[in-house]
Image (cartoon, rainbow, N blue to C red):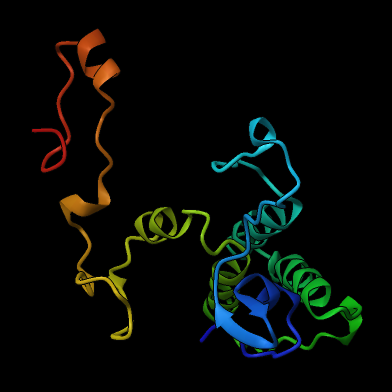
Length: 171
């Protein structure tokens, strides 16, 4: 698992406790019972500060001398998640590639259940590999593959009859 620190506050969003029994549950988009139905939102689209830190960290990994800034961004996120100060966080990496792996791991933990993973692996031209314990019948998709291409919306197709459809997804 990606959560290797048991005191990571993000773990609280992955479990529910009822009658002292802890079960797996996504509480990331939890809706309180006393909220009026019209005020409930089940499709939030937000850019959080943590996402901006992750974007900046990844970008700095590709800039000459940007490793320190990238590492500090990751330390800031881990410190918040562990209720510590960034100075208390010790990152272990020996190359930019190692630092990029730390950024990727933090993206997985921070942005889980938000729909970012497909875009991350597509952007990096990686294969999609799921653990054997997943409920999905699709365990691996090798990049490139039509599964990594999103369909063009019907409104766009109707507005532009000359548009070329995406293979495998717009028939």
